[in-house]
Length: 178
Image (tube, rainbow, N blue to C red; front, side, top):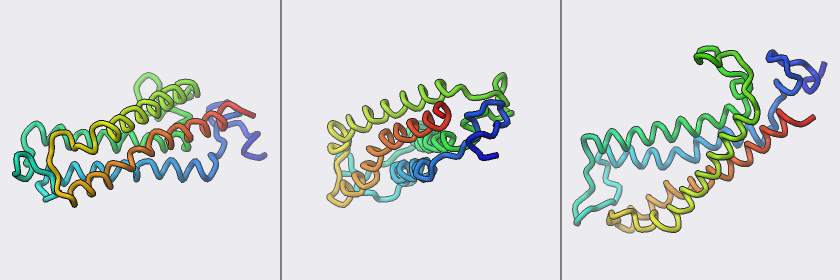
């Protein structure tokens, strides 16, 4: 039997199909696109001189602000890693360890709606940041090198939304079309 006609473990003929190679590459690219900004924030919290200043002094972050910034980096990377589910089996069948839904089929509209909403939100968030907030640095002063580093680390985030939407289209075609 070919993989296109084989019945998947979930019992649905459209499940278990292989994702196109470009989609698999895209799914693995998304976490790499988000990584530089997370590393920039970690460097900020760690006190690495990244060329950011407030009132002429290097930025220092501590306490709950540091926890927030580190948490933001971890959550961002975790959300980026979820895109791999759009090309893997755990994007078709909920992992068994999840309460109530574990082992059940992921309804394609559920995954598609979540991924589409995420992709559109990312385009709006990072588009706004690129146009409105990011070039100013949100109250920080930057050395020329610090500004270049900030842009180099945050501009890749402009790709996250469009890449996720492309991946969502591939997921829909794989799971919902013959």
